Image (cartoon, rainbow, N blue to C red; front, top):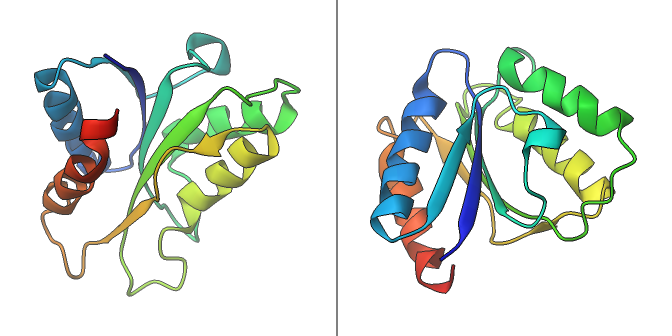
Length: 146
């Protein structure tokens, strides 16, 4: 079964709750998971799947708890060509910076050679007030191939 590193960017705890629901589903299907609220590059296995669950904060920024990881990626020369990631972004489309925080993280991962494992999901809390529901449906779509 797969090893999944779950990186969470959250301000008020909503993204963390979604991540916990995804972790439960992954573990029920026999996958090994680790949860990181303050990830550091050296902690993460580049051969694991990195599942990023993050909201957008402020004017299109990453939540404060993911900012140090983003800065670490900016300054790192580490090659992440073996790394695959999946993004579950959570935002509010009433803001013009809808889901832009996690996009900054994806740009840096791509610059370091990481590749998407599946298409990202952008959950709009205007239309999905219970974001774990579309997140679980998204996971169900690719879980059998993991």
